[in-house]
Length: 305
Image (cartoon, rainbow, N blue to C red; front, side, top):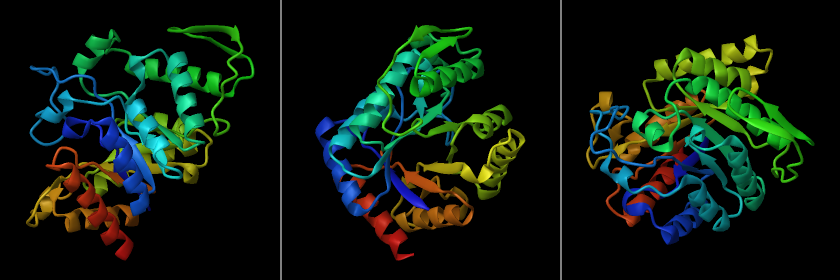
C-alpha cells in the first residue's frame, strides 16, 4: 500500500514557506504522495454539522490555503512524489477554467497529479459561491464531461444543461495522457455507482473495516456493471487522527490513538485491499515540528512492518 501525508495547508500550518519546506521533507522521508483539501470559510453558525466526532467544525478551518496553490508549491519543492486533492470541491468553479488550472498543475509537476473530487457537506459554502445545493450529482456529471472534453478532444465541444463550449481549440493538454487520474469521493449508493461507472478510484475515509469494504464492493460491482475492469480502480483512504500520548480505547481508533495505533490501523487498511492511505494531523499537531515528527514516526513504523 502506498503511503501519503497531508500538505500543510490550514490553521497554523497555512504558510507558503512551510508548505514548500514540509513537502520537500516529506518526500525525503519516503512518502509516496501529498494531499490537499478544500474549504473556503468557517461559518459562525454552520448550516451542517462536521462529519464525524461531535459535529463541531474544526476552528483551524478558518485559515485555509487554496488547495491547488498549495500543491503548486509542493510541486516546485519536490521531484517524484505524487500530488492529490482530497477532496477538491470542483462544483464551485466553471469546469472549463478548472480544467485549465488542473492541466497547468499537471504540466508543472511533470505528470504527478491525481484529481480527487468531492461534493462537500456544507451548504454555507455553496451559498457563498453562488452554486445551487440541489442538483449536485447532475452538476458533477456534467463537470466531468467538460473536463474530459477539454483534456482529450482535439476539437473541444460541449453542449449541456449548464455549460456550452463552442467547437474550439484548447491545445494546452495534461502531461498525463489521456488525462490525470480522477478519483471521486462519496458514501451513498449513487456516489459509489458513479465511482465504478466513470472514475479511476474512490476516495474513502477511515471507518470500521466492514463498512469500508462494503462501500468499496459497491464501487467494484458498479464498475463490472458498466463493463469496466474493477481491478483497475484504486481505493485511497483519508485518516484524520487525534494523536494521543497514551493508547486510546480500541473503539476510538483510528479517530484517536497513538502513532503506533494509527500505524496499525494503516496496516489493516493494506490487508483490506486499500491501495493508498494518507494521514492528516493538522487538527492535532501543536507545532510544525510535531507535524513533521508524526510523519517521520509513522513512516518509520510502517517501513519496519
